[in-house]
Image (cartoon, rainbow, N blue to C red; front, top):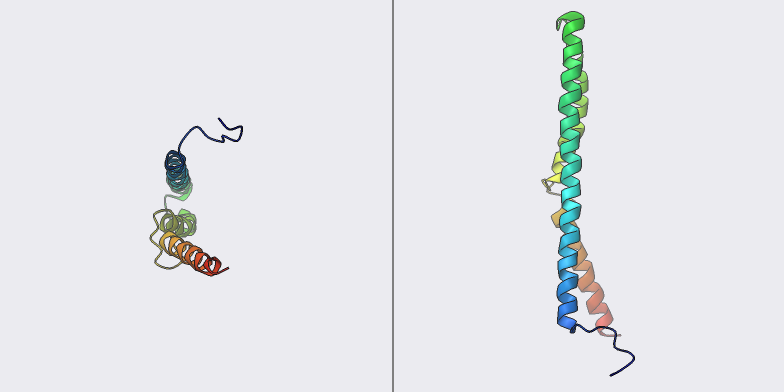
Length: 114
């Protein structure tokens, strides 16, 4: 028995655990993104509804000023949804992952000859 026995598990078990942990961390990050988006959406619905109620009670919708807030926040919410659900065709998650793989492969091929 060696004093340098770092792990009682075989290497494939360690890699399997690493892969599971990596998948878990990605899934946890994804859930966090979804929670932020749905929190933003809930806030939007509640605040805009409140502003619409104030607008109605103050002037019976003679001038619907709450729509300005709904429109402005709605633009931000729209882009948040695009980013959260990876609907952006350029510079989205798929593009990012593809570029990361490309750079890793390039780096690996450059280091192969050293």
